[in-house]
Length: 179
Image (cartoon, rainbow, N blue to C red; front, top):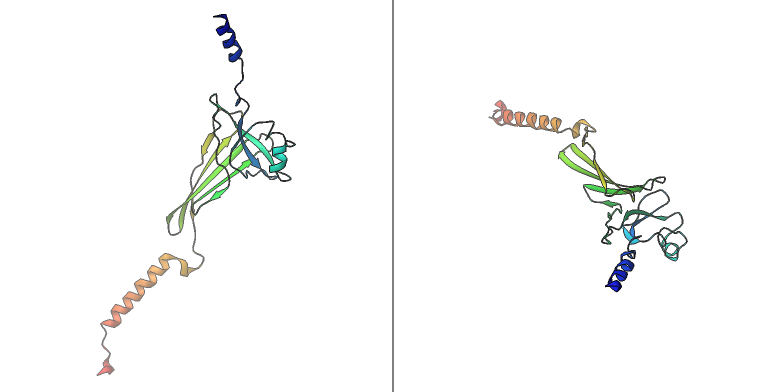
């Protein structure tokens, strides 16, 4: 019984191997995130002189920790590499002072031929905060004005109407000199 208590006390004080692990991202000199989240430790990614950092970083680049491992060892982090699709753009920047990563997702949805709705969401990740914080900004509606009158759909509709009126008028008109 004494052996079991001693073993429990010894094992209870052992720090799990993942206790200092976290999610890290690579950042360029301008603060732009240029990698997805990787699992790493402060002595490997946090030290710019570690063999790993020296082998993987270019001048001006560094690693920033954005998450800590949870009690089960899970290191969840966002895939924050800049991505662009036809209607969506994802970008990420790091605040140089606070080292908070802000991921901005912009979605552009066409509403009508000249009208688009722009929706923007910002999510922040930081080691100190227990979970990501998401802020949804108010949508912005952009109306593109025609560059010339020929580009204006109302003008084109008006021209079509005039054209149909003249075609109807001349189709029913009989010319006197045709006889």
